[in-house]
Image (cartoon, rainbow, N blue to C red; front, side, top):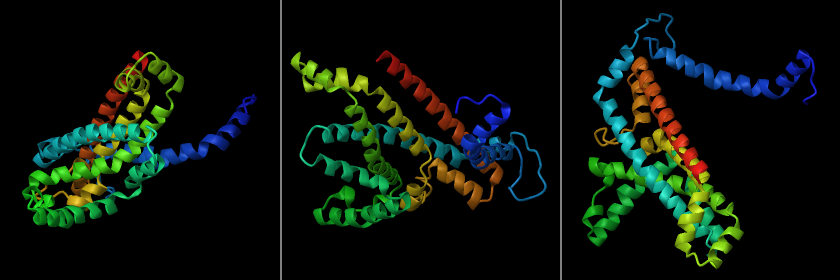
Length: 294
């Protein structure tokens, strides 16, 4: 494989191993992405043969749209809560199912199962729970906070998205933390135990510092998932009531395909990409620095 001497032999090896995935990446990812960037500077709708260059007009329209700014701020708020809650709960679950309790494999499977359910189905299941089951229990037990559907309240509907998002993602992130915990040498923990370290000291001074890689991956995946969440938003609240739960991915979709504003919609999508890419790069760079220090 590494003995090719002529250009023809190298091209044969390249065609055999790299051409098909490179072609697929170019056709499915790279070209549509570049066309999308071009669309942000034009009034092209993807079908019309006439294209007018509009400069930064689509970006001006995007930032002057109050609904877009509200969706952007709401998405930041959603990402913050889901990022913290998902990783704290996932790490706690990982500690629980690696502590040697009876039936830990059953609990691992149970905690991971929500991740296997599609976002659309998950949203409809929780819509029934929030609008029927919880209201019934609230009325039966006379708990005012649950006596009316949270989905109909603009202040509470946001928290239904957070609850479902955390419930869906915690099991998946738990597996990453389990892999991190299983990778810590047992001899190190036994030596710390012999030296008199408590379980809390082992957690703070040994386990967490040696799991920075797992934290990096989990935080990155949670960020990526939270910023582009759409299915649960669609099936659980559909952006309501009164657009109070319209996250950015749903806003971009509605702008482009529901209201047929392709230029501003594509500009908003590109802004979302830049936000996610910038935050992801900063997060990975900061976590890599912690890995080196650990």
